[in-house]
Length: 161
Image 1 (tube, rainbow, N blue to C red):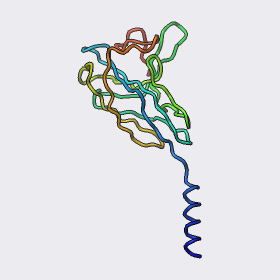
Image 2: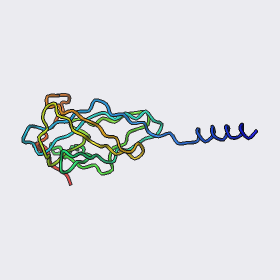
Image 3: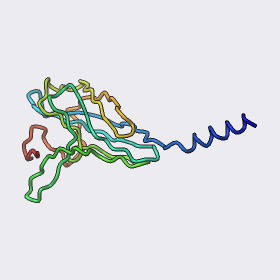
Image 4: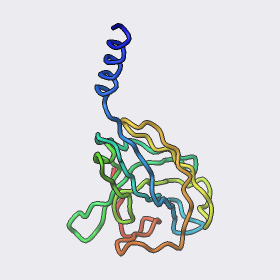
């Protein structure tokens, strides 16, 4: 009797536990505008196969003085403004969120070394539920995957606060 009750209790607890986000980083790449660039960015798709939303809240890398989550916003005057997004990005349950050129991205400001074709950048992404995920991101300066592509040297955009 005790054994049956114990097993039933354990089974009930197992089903009562919250389902956590299950995060995967897909198709990552990083780039800058060249050897003398002071800034660069990383792009990828975040997939969440869990039953709960998660939130990407921070990014860290030793390639730059500052690493932040950023987005571009059309200010209505023909100029895109790059903004820090301190609250991060929501990754919906059983969904995905793309960090892509011309949109949300990880921004590297004050590069400490050049980002050369074929190099790898180590980035630690912090999620509210999934915790820290470290990703090795290849530098691909030749990739052209967005008509919205913005130069990484800051031309054509105003930097936000």
